[in-house]
Length: 348
Image (cartoon, rainbow, N blue to C red):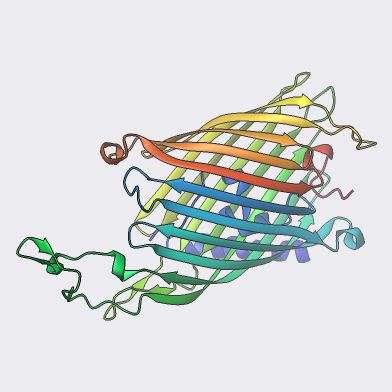
C-alpha cells in the first residue's frame, strides 16, 4: 500500500505544472542531484557527499564575479531491516553571490523521502523538501543616477530609492518523485548494464514573497523540473553512453539542457573482494539551448568522482562575455559504487 502513496506527489506535480526569478543552477547536473530533484536523496547510494563550486561572467563583472558554492549529503536508512524499501534523508546548503552589489543568497534544505523496489529491476521514490533562505545586498556598492551631480559622482547624495534594510528571509517547500530502472552489470566482460532515471520536481510551492524595495513585494515563482538520464553499456567493450535531458520552467523563464557523456572504463573493479578499485573517465558535451555549450570531463576512482566543466556562452550576451561563461568543479564521495550491483535496491 505504501508504494502507491508515492503517486500522490506525482499528481501534485501535474497540477502545479501550469503555475508560473530564476534559481541557481550547475551545469554538471549529475553531480547536483538534490538541486535537480529532492527525490534523488538516497536513490542511488547508501551515502553520498558532494561539494560544488561555480564561477561565471567574470568578463562582465571582473571585480565581483558570480560565484556559487554548494555542499550536500544524502543517504539511506532502514534498508538492512526492510530489504527492498528504505527511508531517505538529504541535506543541501548553498551560498550564491552575484554582481557588484554583492547580492547574496544563502539557503539550507532538508529532504525526507521513501523509496520502494517495485520489481527486481525498478524502483519508485518520493521526497518532500523544506528549507529556509536568506537574501541580502550591499547598497553601498551600488550607484544611482541621482548620485551624479553636474556630471560628477557624489556618494553622499541620496539615491531617493525606497530600499529596504537590505536583507530578508523566507521559508521554502517542495517535493519530487523519481523512477529508476536497472539491469545487467557494468563491471563485467559483458558490460550489459542499462540504467534509466526519470523524475519530476516542484519547488517554491509556497510562492515565497521577497523584495529589496520597501513599498513592493514580488513572488518567487514555483519551479518545475523534469529530468531524464540513462546509462547504456556497449556490450563487450569498455565504453558506455550516458545521454541526459533536463527541463526547468520558472515563471516566464525556461531552460532545456540536453547532452551526452561517453564513459570509458579504465580499470575493472573486483566485485567480490573489493581490493581492486575500478576507475573510469567520462567526457561529454551538453547544450543549454540558446545559451551555452558545456564541455566537461569527470574522472571516477572507486568511490570518488571529480568533475570539471566550462560554459561557453553563445547567446546575445556573447558581445559582453566574448563567449566566456563559467568554470565549474565538483567533488563527490559515494558509497557503495552503484555500478557494481544489478538493482538499485540491492544493499551491500
